[in-house]
Image 1: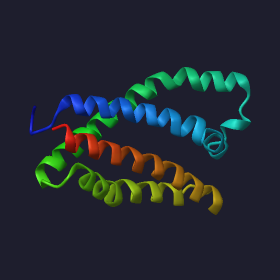
Image 2 (image 1 turned 90 degrees about the horizontal axis):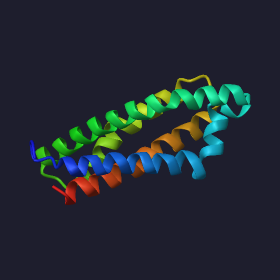
Image 3 (image 1 turned 60 degrees about the horizontal axis):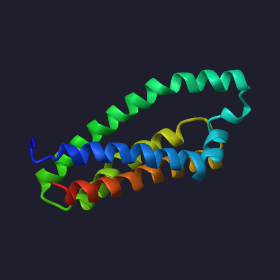
Length: 139
């Protein structure tokens, strides 16, 4: 362990983030998400092209989540608060406002902007609570 961070916990949380994302943007909100990003109107060839390009993006996303978890683990150890409390503060102070800003400034209708915000912020909230719990317990 470096800086009080359990790297196995970070790795497990990274995998969990990918699984939660698969469920969140698949069976739970997949149709709505595809409509928001305009993917439902794409032809089959364009969809296949997008799916082909997705592999490297999933890898990059995984690495970014691992970095995010490393920082959250460090923050949790540094503040001495519970993992869930640290995760909720990080989500409320940094993640949620960033998602809100990107949702507001996208030229979509108000309904689409709010839907985008709730889907993205909800996913991050669920992940951060899970992250905080695991990093707080498994240190």
